[in-house]
Length: 576
Figure 1 (spheres, rainbow, N blue to C red):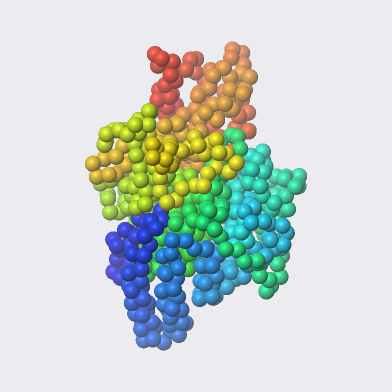
Figure 2: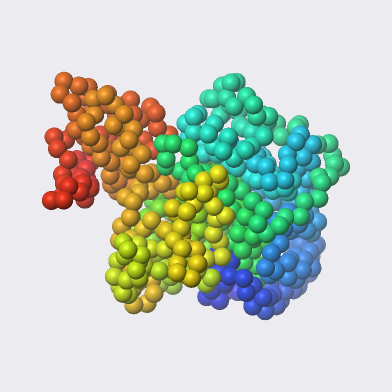
C-alpha cells in the first residue's frame, strides 16, 4: 500500500475514520476485510521467501482472526472484555501494553485483568459500583481500569491535579468502595486520606490480585450499564461525574478499531495524555479493540515522546494542542524519524490554523481534529490533510452526528449566522452522576422531544458545512486541555476580604493554549495583588491557578451594566 508506506492513510480509510462517533451501520465496513486479508497473504509470501518463520506465524495468526474480529466489531453492540480475551488467545506473547516498567503481552494482559476482576468481586465490588483510580498513567493503571469493567464495575479515574477536598468529593459521588492509588499521590495525601475506602497501591496490584488460575464471575454488560465516570475539570467545587454507558463506548470505538483492521494498519499507539482524561480513550481503548499495542506515558515530556515515537515506530497518537506546540518548539524534533506515523488526532482545546499548518508540514501522516465534549453532543471532524483551506474550522459533523445553531431564544438562525451550538449523536453521556438538575441544564429538548446537548460554544456554519467557532457562550477557558470556568475563579477571588470585585478572562498562552488572568478592585489599605494571588492559588487545583492578577480601579461596563470582558481581555494581553 503506497499510501501507507508514505505514512499517510488512504482516502477510503479516512472516510471510515470519520465514523469515529459510532455510526451504527458498521456492516458496510466488512467489504474492506478483503484488503487486509490480501495484504496479510502477501506478508506471508514475503516471509516465506526469506525464511522468517516467526513472521509467518504472526501473519497467519492475524489473518485467521481478522475475519472473526471484524465481524464482532461490526455488530451494533459488544463486550470490550470479550474482545480482549479473543485477541489474547490469538496474539499471545505479542505486546499489548508498554510503559517505563516494561512490556505486558496480550496473554499477560488478559490474565492480569481476569485475576484483578476476580479479586475486586471477592472484596465486595458489586455490579454498577465504581472503582476510584488515582495516580500517574501506567500499565497497572490501565489494568485496573479494564479489570473494573470486566468485573461489572464502573471505572472512575480521578484527576490528579484536584485538591484533596475535590478528590474526596469525587470518590464519594462515584460511590467507590476501592481506591487504587500510586505511591506518589499516597505520600502527598497522607495516611488519613479517604480511610473508609479499601486502598490498594497501583505498584502492588500483582500481589493484591487473585492467585493464578482464578476466574472472575461472568459479567455480560447490558447496553445501558455504566462503563466509566469521567469527572469534569475546571470547577472549584466538586466536579460533575460524566457517566458513559457500555453502548456509548462501543459505538465510539468499535468503528475506529474496525477501520484500523480494514486498512491493514499495524496499530502502535502512543498515549501521552492522562488516563483520567476522556481525550486519552482514543489512544487507549480503540487500539486495544483492534489488537494493537499501546504505550502509556506517565507524564508528557517532549524528548521522551519523540524517543518513544521513533523507537516504537508509533502509527497513531492523540495529542492536545499545547503538546503539538511543545513538540514543534523542541530543538531535537527534526532529529527523530517519525515516518511510521499514519494518523494523529487532536482535541480538547483551541487548535489554531497556524499550528495545524505547521504540524502538517513537519509531522508525517494524517491529522484529524475532533470537536466535541466529554458529555457528547455533536462530533465534528476535520481531516486537516484533506482540507488545508479549512484549517480555521473544526470540520463537519461526523456521520451519526447532528448540529443546529440557535439564537438566545432557541430559534434556529440562518446559515452563516453565529449562534449557540447544540448537537446530538450516537455517543451521548447517560447523564451527570447524581445530578439530574445539571443534566437537564446541559440539554436542549426540541419540540419533538429529541434530546440535544448544549455545546457551550458560539459558532457558525460556512457554505460547505464546516463549523467555525467564534467564541464561547460561557467564557470558558481551556488551558492545557482542561476546562476552567471564570465564574468559579471570580468567586474564589471575592472570598478574599480585600477584594471588592473580581473578573477573570482567558488569554492566549503558547505553553497552555490559554491561561486565566484576573482583575480585582481592591479595598483601600488592603493587601497587594501578589498576596491575594498567592492566597487564592493555594486553594485552587493546579490546572485552575491564575497566571496573573492585576488591580483595576473600576470594572469596564456597557451602558446597561454588562461587564465588558473583551476590554479586560485586551488589557490582559497588553500586560502579559
